Image (cartoon, helix red, strand yellow):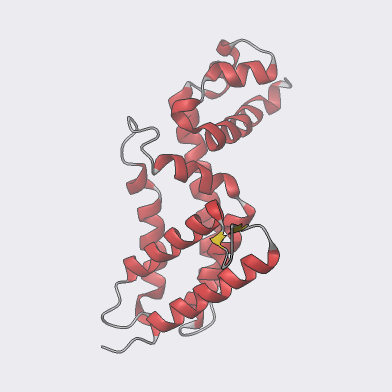
Length: 197
């Protein structure tokens, strides 16, 4: 390995392995084997397994926060801002499948011995976006539930696709299926944003 690139290359490999296998299923030996080096080289360059995982999760959070902040900075006025952020969220996770995979593992108790990740990352994003859209959300609609529905639906769809009307599943990576999902998400959000008490 080139010395200057070592930590970033190790973190990149760790990201792929954590996304594919989860924290509990990945070992530092796998990273070392991928580069043909001893485990001690990995830990010297990038830290132990826990530190590597926290670095990966921090970088994933920063990438997502940057995308959402950019969306909020370019929001059109009114309810259209909520739709704009929804589109940015979908686009981010389509373009960064490893972030969804990292959290999918976490949601089934992966890395259970590392507490409070939800408080450090998703909760901060909810607060960030929630503070931007709260004035567009009518009374009676819980802003956090609205954002939760965005997260649950997008992650669920991208993780499994959608049930076909006749047989099988429609894959999320098919452009027409993704476009229809996006359209249906906008219809659902618009219904909530125009809800009357």
